[in-house]
Structures are given as structure tokens and as C-alpha cells.
Length: 398
Image (tube, rainbow, N blue to C red; front, side):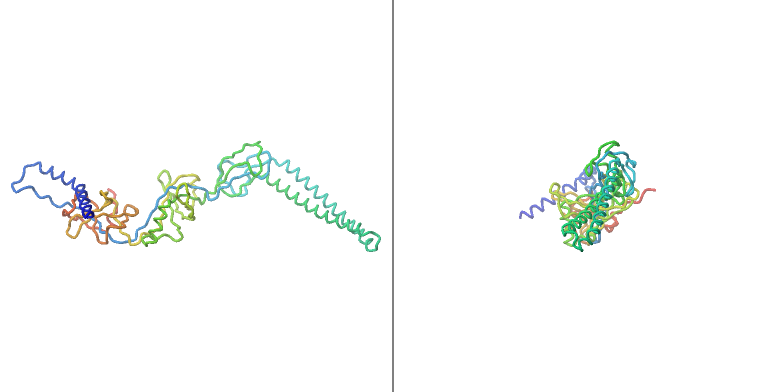
């Protein structure tokens, strides 16, 4: 009994809302003199309908993202010293291996000369120990030298060999330090400003000199909420939505001025983890950026395409009304009368609502003229079009 009562209340509220304009028109018409034959009969209002048919619809999902370099490297010195010179223009494009800064090499060149001398000394000691063995070996074989004296000579040679290796390692390290006074770009990309002035003392591995961003291609990072992820998986599991393989959506980026980036990209990473602070997961796309129009840190509007609604029913957005208990559409029934139909909508697809429940193939949904109708009143169909045609924009004025 309660269910029937709710339905009656629902249709009464819909009737009240949709007939307001009609009642006003009737009131205005009644201001004239009454006819001898009674009030004139108003002709049925003319409406435009869209015939609902199942079809595949391209799904588009939007998000707000931020650009970031594919690789972003912090340039730090590998030796401690005085920054002697800048070798690049701030904000310019640099190549991998290009010199960016010069650290005063004098102390390191002196250390290199010392290491070279230490190696020469170690070589001399090794040569001396080998000559000692050459002299002692025949004497030891003839019993003219003790075993201890010979063993000491052999040990001295082994120590000398180790000394040479140590000196060679020190020389290699000294050469590296001299080379590290030339701070080079580790990757090709665009530099930021220099953070240390010439003459500053910079510390190895700690002082930040500048950063380099590789921006062709460029990354766009955005997030999808847990609710959105669950919705996509649910729709896909129910067979209503076909997702692209491996989640590699096509990505289009719109900039702050409303223009669209010339080339599209692909989603190349989706994090399985959720950020506990935002309840969303990170998604990353990669886009070609040969014109360098996109720069790291820009906020952009991201559109994801590549998914398809399968056997979907959709109607133009203007055909969907807000009723007292949810969304409704007005359909023309078999008797040619307007009938309110509660519906459950899904996502937007362009300028259409995807309808999950409430409509069936062949239903005639009123698109234009809905405010002139009353539930249960006859209507005149001006032109029955498929839903795909009903959404087409009018041709431009000549």
C-alpha cells in the first residue's frame, strides 16, 4: 500500500512541475471573451524526440593534472672546493656531458702530482725488491744465505707490489677529482637557475648547483579517486564498459588558456596504492613535447579516451530532468501521450547521459519541447530521430 501511495505522490509532483507553464498559457488565453461553444481546445504541443537504440559510445574521463619532466636531475658537485666559473646560460637547453660549472682545480692538480710521485716511488721500491731477490736467490740455493734473509726479501717484494697497487688507486682517484672539477650535465634537458654564485664554497654531494629537466617527452601526473576506480572496475566486470588494454588510455591535454596540446599521449603507469591522505591513486601519462610548449609544473586538464560503453543507451543531457525523487525523462508512449520515466544515469559521454536503468531500446525520449508537455497528455512528434542524430549541433549560420 505504501509503495502505491509513493508512486501516486511522485506522479502528482511531476505533474505539478511540468504543467506550470501550460496552466499559465491557459490562464492567459482565458482572459478573452468566452466562446459560445465553450473554451477552445489547445492543439497537442509539438515535441522532438530521440529514439533510443543500443550502440557503442566512446567514454571520456576528465581529471586535473600537473606536468613533470620525464627525468629531473639535481646537479651537485662531486668534490669540495671553490666554485670558479659558470659555463652555461641559465634556463637553456644543454646536452649530456656539457660543462655547467668549473670548480677551482688547482688543489686537485697538486694532489694528482703528489699521487703520481707516490706511484713512481712505489715502482722504485718494487724494482729494488726484485733486484734483491735476484741477488739472493743464487746465494740461497748454494746455502750461503739464510732462509730468513731470503724470505724477508720475498716479503719485501710482495709489500712493494701492494704499495704499487695502492699508489695506482690513489693516482686514479686524484685524476677523477681533477675531472670532477668540471661539473657536467648528466642528461640532456632544460636547466634551471644556478643556485650558487661564483666564488662560493661548495661541498661534495651536498650543495645543490642547479637542476635539469628532460621535457621531451614529458610526464603528466594526475589522480583517480578510489570511487572512480571502483566504478570503472564494476562497469567493466558487468560488461557495460570495455577498457583499453593494460589501462593504456589515450591522453589529451588542455592548457590553462583553453588550447589543446598538439599531440596526444598514453597512460604508462597506474599506481596500485592509494594515498591515505586523499583516497586516490596516482596515474601518469607520457606525451611528446617536441615544441616544448609544456613545461614542468604546469596545471592542465587531462582527458582520457580509449574506453567504450558496450550496448549502451544514451540520451541528450537536455532531455534529463531533475524530479522530486531523482532524474526523469519524458517519453512518448504507444498512445502518443507524454509519460514521465524515472531513470538511473551513468557517466556523461560528450553531450549525452548514459542511461543505466529506466529505458529500453525503441523508447522515444522527448528532447525538445518537454516543458510544454503534461504527463498523460497527448503530444505531436515533430520529427523522430535516432539519439545519435538528436545530439548533433545545428549548422553554423551563413
